[in-house]
Length: 321
Ligand code: SF4
Image (cartoon, rainbow, N blue to C red; front, top):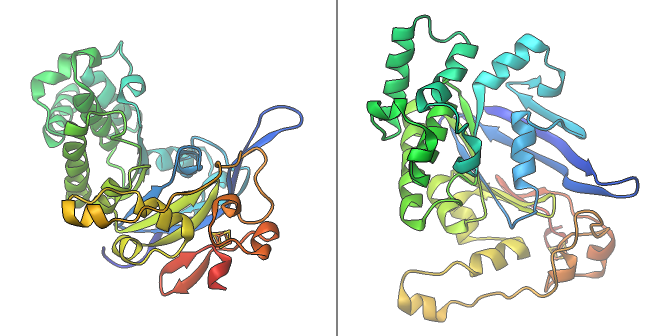
């Protein structure tokens, strides 16, 4: 990672969805963090923790209910039309499901060239063809794939097309939302390696959203752990695995199988009791309270703030106050 300059700042972000006149789903509920230029920030958590909603709100697919997302110091919620258009070029998303995120009626060339044309990045048909072919090669596909339709490709190849589409407008920031979870295990590592290679070559800043804790360590510089709409812990990737502090992170990490059979035999898994509460009616205090083996009285009533416990190691837990 180069200089620690924040490229994106998420400040007290809330994203709520109205279900009906009485119920509101609090998908992201007062989350703050920064993303530094050139880094990969992994965001992990179980299904329903708000990680995808958080990523989509940062990209601008969802409008924040409260709080701000600043990109290079500019509030994305207050951008004018021209700034917004620039933003949609600089910040791109790779989606979870390559099967549904690519238009089946278009050829691969049309899918990839669409953004280039919309942003005026190509000036002739010949240039467009050349750029599409270059991108296909960069993502490990061939020039002749350009004239085919997405149904002719495997899941891994479709995700490569999705990555080429995201890169077609030369972004500086990409959000990858569970980019490997719909793929066979055999191709997951190849797609992750491709993302790492492209991130280095293009000096991209990226956010990698996943529920897969073993894979996120491999790709991320820092990792944020989300639980029920809140950030529970955030620090450098290695430190998170060596010294997790939040009881939820400890439980998640204890569930990762270890490839060494001897060490695996001795692995002590922390089993969490209780159910994940509903984000429609989250607990008043710490959201992890009903499942936490260390819960104290204060945890039932006061929601812990995310605090810097050690340099660059942030934890939201009353045990560290
Ligand atoms: Fe457990 Fe309390 Fe910490 Fe929440 S704040 S994780 S309930 S100890």
